[in-house]
Amino acid sequence: MRDPIGPDADVAQSDDNRRWLAAFYRERAPALSRYLRYRLQGADGEDIVQDAFARLARHRSLAAVQNPDAFLRRIVRNLLIDRTRRAAVRPQLVELDAHEPQVRADQADHIELVQLQAEYRRIVESLPPRTRQVFLLHRVEGRSMKDIAANLDISSRTVEWHVAQAILKIGEALERT
Image 1 (cartoon, rainbow, N blue to C red):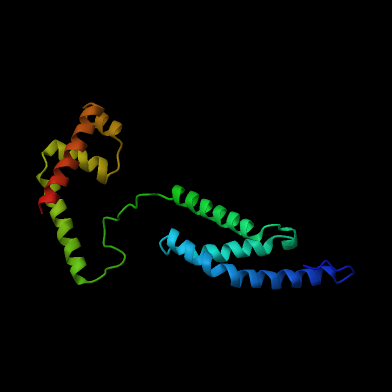
Image 2 (cartoon, helix red, strand yellow):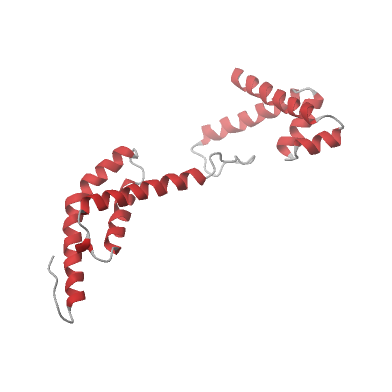
């Protein structure tokens, strides 16, 4: 790139940067997109390419970059690290609402859901009375095991045992259906 001298130096340098960046994008973006599509199995690849070139464009002096390919790879690597970190802090489990799902694929899915909910209720009702009581206090009312133990005058270990037994019996019964 040229290094003009005079009052229009910044404008000329900026135009040179834009032309260079456009040519670099046309040359490198397709291969980078293919690489990211392969690495991420199609998810977010194009967005990362756009973000990488946007960060490259914000760099003050592209002329000072000695190895643009390595610089671009470093930007992409940092974006992938950021993406991984964001994914790590997101909740891994999504709490399912006890009510209707937000989106129904079709009527058959809705019928299956209603039947599964009825079966689940039937299984919970078939649990031994104390196990059912402890399970419902813990899972439905959201009370702590310590609180349940104090209110029912049993040990925390017994509360844990009842909850574990309930989960085990519900799982076994659902597997049979």
